[in-house]
Amino acid sequence: MRLSTKGRYAVTAMLDLALNGADNPVTLADISNNQGISLSYLEQLFAALRSKGLVKGVRGPGGGYFLGKPAAEISIANIICAVDEWVEFTRCRGKQDCHSGQRCLTHSLWDDLSKQIFDFLTEINLQELVDKRDDHKRCKPTKTTLDHQAA
Amino acid sequence: MRLSTKGRYAVTAMLDLALNGADNPVTLADISNNQGISLSYLEQLFAALRSKGLVKGVRGPGGGYFLGKPAAEISIANIICAVDEWVEFTRCRGKQDCHSGQRCLTHSLWDDLSKQIFDFLTEINLQELVDKRDDHKRCKPTKTTLDHQAA
DNA sequence: CAAAAACCTAGTAATTTACTAGGAATAAAT
DNA sequence: ATTTATTCCTAGTAAATTACTAGGTTTTTG
Image 1: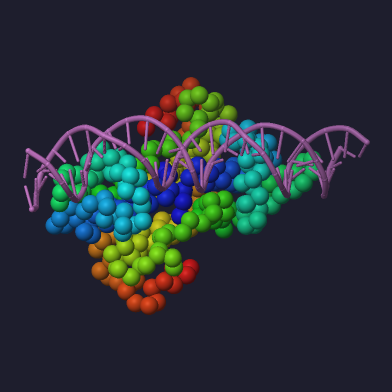
Image 2: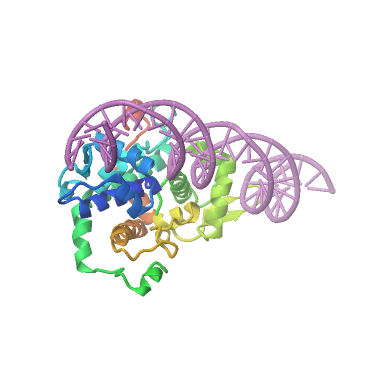
């Protein structure tokens, strides 16, 4: 599992879609403006998301992107895996000798941990994130917004 | 939160220490051999780990590294943060206008998610990973070890 | 037809990762 | 005391990844 800014962009963009794509498709130009990500980079990310069925593109004027399936069926792990290209957990796949036991032990421990993280991210879906928003609205358009990130 | 191969190296190395550092210090040369990471790169990672008190170095022949505190007190988040340099969660810290509400919403959602992941990794400590090993030993030194990573 | 959008490809700047090289300080062993 | 094994430190760099730029094409609406 890998969790980088690239994955963050993808998750953020998908959240944008989940929030705004209910009625009309959302254009990449909008997301680019909203999130401060370059248009072409978004195109690349969305090519990956589309190939995994996570978004659906609508061409032509008035077009844009919808979620490819209900937000409740899209996990964070789905999104990150789509753009981040799976990383092998250990290095001992085949080519290295995993027989000495020692190396393999730490590898299998790491493997377990990775699985835990993956399972965790598999259990969170877009809909849950959106629903949660309604509980504790914050970051209102007031003067104090700029320091809400102090921590 | 960022979870990259660099963080993986650090966690794997710390696991190695937790497993082998009970009596004698573990040398970076050993870890380098065990895990297939270059010695100098390990030195850099351990400089970061040391500065955060996660490991203690012992110089001279017979030296090496110990854990800086009990394995039960070292979380995975501790380790990753030590080497990975904290990544700001959102981009709207100050410089960008977070007032429109729209961008800020996805940002706060992402912020929530990051926090969840961070909390999750904070709750897992080295000792737990090591203990878990005893439950289901696998990856035994047999002929079949090489394909245990098939998935 | 014109315009707005997805869609596609190639190149490249910027950043991060991982390593190389060379040493200095410290402490054990001979 | 010298040698040796180790941490500790700095600078440079190759390789990989991230993020972007540029330039198109297709599709669909008006």
